[in-house]
Image (cartoon, rainbow, N blue to C red; front, side, top):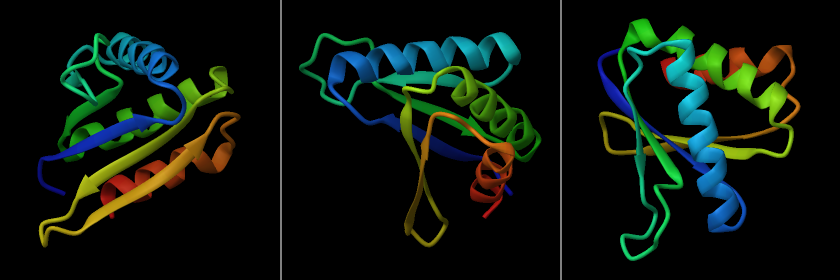
Length: 115
C-alpha cells in the first residue's frame, strides 16, 4: 500500500462529533506521536476545531492505526465512526464502526486500510 489519506468522520450532532474527533486524535497521537493526524472542519463556517480527522497513512502505520482505533472504540462505547478513503481509480470506499469493539474490529480496520 502506498501513502494515502484516510478520513474519520463521526455520527451525531456537530458538538459531540467535535468532542469525539478531539478525543480520538489525542488518543492516537499519545499511542504513536509520529502518526500524522489532522483535524478538519466539516463546515468552514462552524466554530468547531474539526469534527473530521485526516490521517496520512503509509503501510507501516496500518497496524498502529487499526490497533489504536479498536482500543479507542473499546473505551468510547458511545462512538459511531466512519472511515473513508479514495482508491487510485477514484472510487470512495467506507466502513462504519460502532463502540464496543470486538476482537474482529482491529482486523476489519486493517483489511479496510489494506484493501
